[in-house]
Image (cartoon, rainbow, N blue to C red; front, side, top):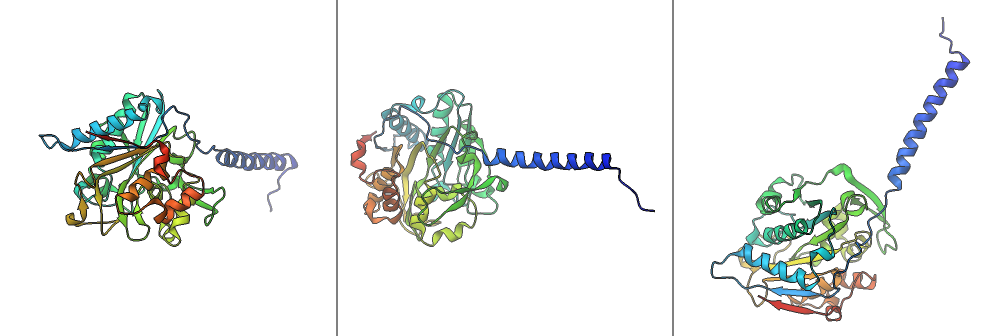
Length: 328
């Protein structure tokens, strides 16, 4: 004998199912309504600061970089002009490769630590350090780069990316890309108040150079290998979504050849004449345009810098930014 369902039971079940579907739809709408991060309102000066650092009599790299960072940020007005008490800060270095700091393929750990300390001192509620590395297992890159240890000792929450937290986002005015997968802790207003990009300056086999704008590839997911075809306009497109509040280009050591992976100390330049610099600005195009000069180029010679300038993402003539040099 077949079981019969009364009309009342049927209506209750239908209502429950409908409510459940509505709940799922409502939760989905909450997800869709997440607000993309805007640039943090701040009183930092808009000039470009380049700090040259020698070495002291103790040859103490950590202390000289700390002083370089202090002087450079002070020249822009001080970290308290950007980071407010209670802010959630994310610092995004390049931790892409399993290499030690002397090979200059990842951001110098002392540069990251100096920034973390300054953000903590300015009153940040949380300073998170992360990168989407080029390896499936990010652990060796985090450890051997020296960044994990240095950042934690300075007070940062050091995280691996969670692959479930990449979200597809439409790119406004994308020239080549209409949308791409971005890491939500870097792009949503409720996840980050201040985003600081801390790349290293190095040669790159595909894009010619890897600096601030290129470092955005560590903020996205998807098939990143496919981004290397027509890479220059794609880099500009990705930077239309990511709102970086401050860029610090690590050029204390620079990789002149065989980038991005390096592996030969003879390819690294750490001379005062050509390296030992921090380039700091709120304008990533100006930062990269100056950075190009350390490799014998002008900004207009590098496709992604020119594309980003044409997209209105910054000034390619860095001298128009109130260029300032400091030597210590």
